[in-house]
Length: 311
Image 1 (tube, rainbow, N blue to C red):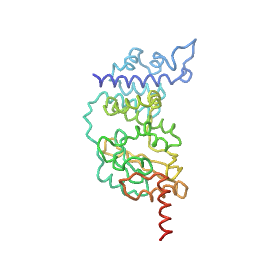
Image 2: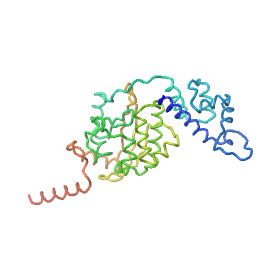
Image 3: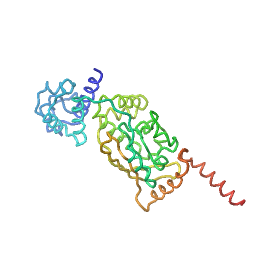
Image 4: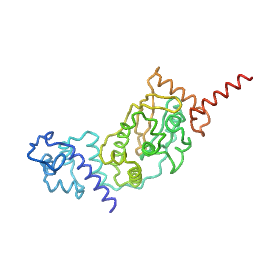
C-alpha cells in the first residue's frame, strides 16, 4: 500500500510540476481574465493532449497506472518535455507496472576495480545505483575526500554517498566553486534514478534525510527538475593544490545495475593538469592515510630541508 501511494504521488507530482511550467501563451491558448493557477489548467492540458479531463485527473491523481504509450507521447508533447523528462515520465509509469526484486548488496566487478586502480594519473571512481562510492583510486580519494579514510569506499554501510556529501559534508561542498550549479545537476540526476525506482526504500531514505537536513536540497527536489548527468566541467578549489578545472565523464557500466564509472581529466599542458600531476605525486604514499592538509605539507617540507641542512 505504501509503495502504491509513493508511486502515485511521484507520478502526479511530476505531471503537476510540468503543467505549472507551461504558460497558456506558449501553448497557444488565449488568456481570458484573471487566472488563479500557474501554468496550464487541467482541462487545457487534457484538450492539448487529446484526452478527456476526467481521465487526465485520474492520471494526475495516480489512480490509473495503465496509460498507453500514445497517451504518454501526447502528454509529453503538450507539456513540452525534454528528452530526459520524457524518459522520466515513461520510467515513472513503467515502474508501476512491474514487480521489482529486492536489490542485492552492491559490489564492483573485479575487472572494473582493476581498471580504476590502474588509472593512477586520472582520478577515477565507481558510483553505485544510489550514488554510493563503491571504489575509488588513490588520486580520486585525494582529489575529492582526502579528509575521509581511503578504505571507506570499500566498506559496508558506511560508504560515502555522492549526494549526501554534496549537501551535508562541508569539506566536500567547499571543493566546488560552482556549487549551486552542480547541486542542481546532482538533484536532477537523483530524480532520474528515482524515476525508475519510485518506491525504493534506500532512495526514500536518502531523499528523506536530505530533505530534513538541507533546505537547499528540499527546494531543489520539490522543483522536479530531471536530467541525466553524463559529463561536467568542474571548477574546484582543492585544499592542497589550489584551483583547478577538470572535466568528468560518467559512463554507465553494462550489466551492473546502474553502476557508473566516473573519470576526471584536465586539459593537457594547463595549470590544472600540473596541479593534478602534483596531487598524484602527493597521493602515492600510504593509502590508509588521508591526503595531508597544506599546513602539514609545509611542516614536512621545512623539517625535510632542516634535516638535509644538518647532514
